[in-house]
Image 1 (cartoon, rainbow, N blue to C red):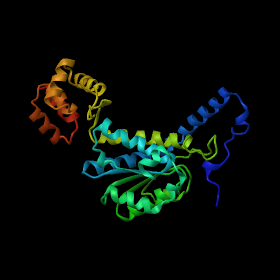
Image 2 (image 1 turned 90 degrees about the vertical axis):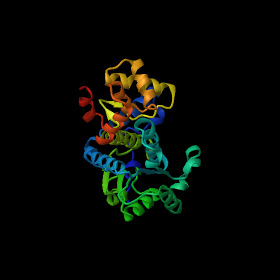
Image 3 (image 1 turned 90 degrees about the horizontal axis):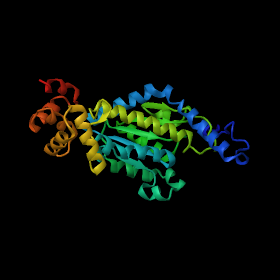
Image 4 (image 1 turned 135 degrees about the vertical axis):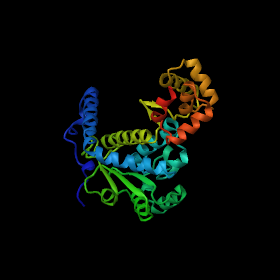
Length: 297
């Protein structure tokens, strides 16, 4: 079997154990920065994946995440942020992580080879044809991820494959292949490093575009956030004040009238009733921009 690029020797690895701490850190940092350059060529595919995910969520479907080990952790970190940042219900963005919750505390390599568990996790996710599956595997051949991706594609789901090895099985299977050509790691095979960094950044980019397409971002503000702590309540008030032009006190009163929902509160702060705001947002598909100009009249 040909050696995977992620297992190859990095040109700066020789003598890594014998140099100063500052030199080690500089080497690792430079490799991380270099890895990020692999994202630019993949932007068109990341855009395709985001548009597919947004469309699935818009019509009431799901955008699921799949991964094992380090790739699974990158997927999980993005998945867990979507409800708080964009107000997307957790059951609409399910996560399939090899080994489940126990593996988050004590990661074991064996779970990524468990095809039976993979199929059980897929069944629990309860996906429908047309839903989107974001599958991450640095090597592009992890059995857990490949089992789910293969079954999902057979069921009519759109498979997006994020991989760091050229011509890997996941890229060949995926409807939307996202190749992140990060090459060798400073620590050979430790794909939590360059490969993991690019996966996380690519997912950041994807989920931001999904949020924008769903109307959950306006002028860089997260207007569909879930304000479930004091910090986020304050943030919600600042967002309402900034977009509506009202005072922060008025923004807080508007939020009280909309049960903390930011988008309708912006319209209420500009003079609409909560009922009228809700109707206007339904008509605009949840997007603020089409509603804001009429709201000034």
